[in-house]
Image (tube, rainbow, N blue to C red):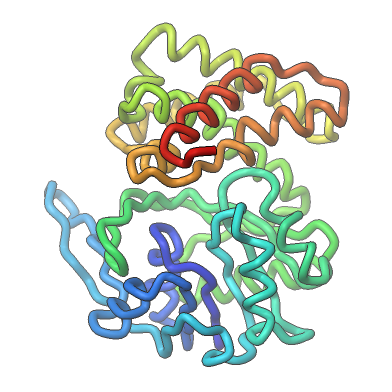
Length: 312
């Protein structure tokens, strides 16, 4: 299949690189150094060597890499890894890659990416999901693979068959994929982890172990996840509260030495995804009349932290 990628950052590079094993992969990124590096060296992924602490750098070569979607043309599946604040404009720019039968799939963190894509693309073409993969950007076109897991996909308005088509394309490249009928429960399942960990690590400038081991951070995380569970259940999802709470902290413990994506953003002086994680809990909570004071406070604190370097 002809698979397009919109955005070749940390996670996008992992998926784009591995998808070259089975498909004609075309990468678009608006940051010229990324495309220049990919054209010259391929997508470089530092992969863990089993039983050892060091990694091996492997190069994966896409069929095409460009800053201009017009160079690519229409693809069968467009996998989107553009940060939510740029998504609407990115989708408008990517229209030359999207035909009436193109599946547009987002696997990004948080709640709100789908809405940005749906401003431009018919919802009947959109597949939504998330990933358990972890990745750290090292330099343009070069990332470190920091963890693997299952990719979950489903649809909200599109026929579920489109999710199965996307799943088969991913499986052909070696990904473990599950198709879910109630995909929002899967989205929330990961959001609970992000709510517990990302903002705290971003503010405290520490790896995930801080949320796990520091008693005060742990309690703050618990309070925020409790609120997120209240909101998710009010929105129509079904969860075992204890199971979800335990899972959130199990993931944090298992990734104790990882640097959360939000902390990576803070350190690189980029806008964070706080608005579609803790901020999304607050926004949806207001829609359903569920109070979210802890998530609201954390959202404001992270916005205050990033405003120091963004100037807004």
